Image 1 (tube, helix red, strand yellow):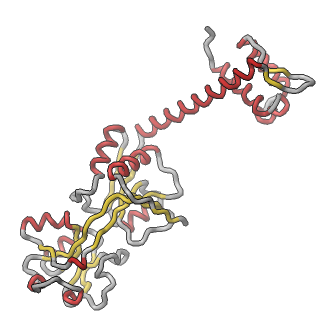
Image 2 (image 1 turned 90 degrees about the horizontal axis):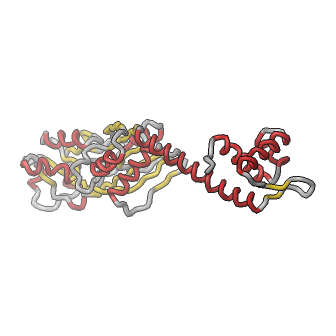
Image 3 (image 1 turned 90 degrees about the vertical axis):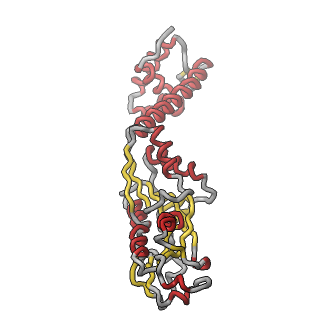
Length: 308
């Protein structure tokens, strides 16, 4: 049984190029060879295979019955080689890749957030991939993704940015909180916007006008922060009322250090999205992590695209 060597593969590739070109003369340009050289190498291939693959002469180029079968086998062979090389490259790159993941803060206590499980699953499958994580606000993360400084982001954006794709993951409930001795708690009914006009409020920050109180005039916006922990410090000081995720604020509620303000009409749901650059293909490692995160959350909403 004759073994296939590298030289045979080169001759077979030459044969396929000739067939695809429609003959020796037409294949000269693609192969960058003189017709006499092409003819010599085809003779070598036929000798090595022990069969005639094609007829060439006045009647033009045409495959023999055996030549047609060899051509079909070559198509399968080269497709298999290409597939093998792609899979090998995928294994190599995923196994030794590096990913930059940027997240908004204080998501770990949200029971709907499955990022931890996704990372665990990914690391079990690809233990040699390194993951660099950073905590920023949503606007900063979007800019990092657009600038190529992060491949994947977890954001909660009020205004999606052009050039990014947003894949819905989960939501969280944002409620107003204050310290147990705050005067607002003395109001014996549901709190309205009017009740808070003279109350110092923690705003979300210049680029995050997303709360039901953000655009209310005459409120005392004496502090601002895009960071949930910083907001918690301000609320715990006793001077401010501010929005916090219910799962995060429960830490201090259970200690008796923070109270949810009775204002259901002023509560809202913040949505979190896996955020990627629309126009650039992710690395293989980042693609695997993206799939792991998306699969862990089993998102129901279609991704949002905003092209530049």
